[in-house]
Length: 330
Image 1 (cartoon, rainbow, N blue to C red):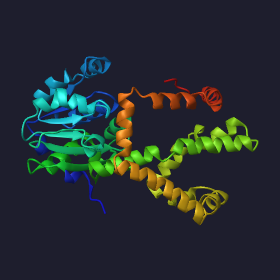
Image 2 (image 1 turned 30 degrees about the vertical axis):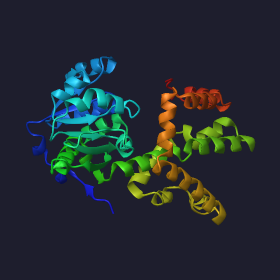
Image 3 (image 1 turned 135 degrees about the horizontal axis):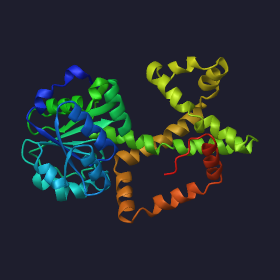
Image 4 (image 1 turned 90 degrees about the vertical axis):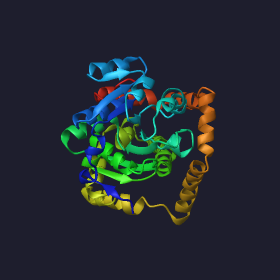
């Protein structure tokens, strides 16, 4: 069982007299920087000179190039995209780190696969929010907080855990829960969630309903357009995955719990498929494939995305979303 940390687990004294650099002022960076500032922590922002840099300035932060922000801080929260982080780390972060400092990742990917070449004299921590940046900010302001996977990957100082929990408290995740994990575990769960095939399962269901005579609009509304999924997700948070079933009709309960089960053979086949995904994540096959894809300029990703966007359902989906007032291009 994992250890779960709450507000009383973190002590902000470990941040007293220290400066935290938030490197990357995107959705997560802006939210975490503002939360820490509101918690009384001194924060500087490091970013390339683009619109996000200007946003940080507009939000009244001291903003610098990444290397300069690192020079001015003691603890460094890396909120740069996974794809460019190793290069930026080698060029603009690692040369300016001092012994006893700490770097914090919000995704375990580059640490788990050895792409982040950190000095042995610094702590390596993980605070990985399980929600988007806007929710990180909103739940901090509401006092509710948000869940994160947290952990210490490398303890150079002997007090890495205390610093990690202090930062987690300042960011606001301990208002809800910081669940002890590792970079390897966070990477496994995150990649598996992304690769298990949910989007294609929904589209497959749509195609079969239309094949059976349902209108495209009714099929989409049933699975994702209505927003019911977000309502169900809220009830799952308060009552559990199967506990939420009691909030549905008896017909729905029977369909979800009885009819929806796989046969023994189907269950074995699906588990075998999913174990194959896990194996590719754990043995590094996916990481190698994704690295080569990045180096080639994303040809497979771009091709498959284009194929998906020209699917016959796309213009129907856009029209329905527009009619319902939901559509936001881009």
